[in-house]
Length: 212
Image (cartoon, rainbow, N blue to C red; front, side):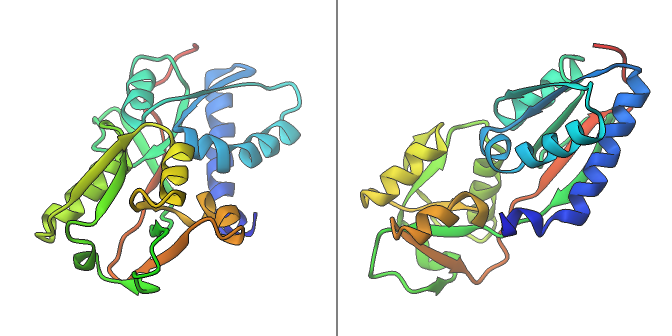
């Protein structure tokens, strides 16, 4: 809760943009695309605020990989998307609303409380599936720093990734809002990354839109 509300200023900007989108479309329906983690942890509070200010608004929420959501927006299937940062085509408007830090989670007492990425060279890492913006970012960061990355398992489901970490099968990267409850229950450890490592969460929509 507190972690999400720390993005309040950005969320208010997001709400303003969404309300403008509704007005621009002259519709009482809003189709939002998002990744499953953002749909789970971030969007419910946003949708609640939207419904409070627009009681008759019908909101439809769909989930998928960031690239899939972006393609649906380009194809006029969704009005807006809340996704991990990608390279966007010229007809997309992008507003960055949050840049949460990434932490490494592991059930390994041998790891320190804080570490550099290079200390994870060849450590078994569980990554989101191919096509995930988070995966692309992490792979690029390891490559940019010349650090060998041991991709131990690919998995499309965030809950399954966290459970495998709990079982000691490897480590994974998550923002704080996605792991807070598990950390409180001591299912695994939250390890700080000394290097700058963060997600970029963008609100995206078409410059020129039409009714959907």
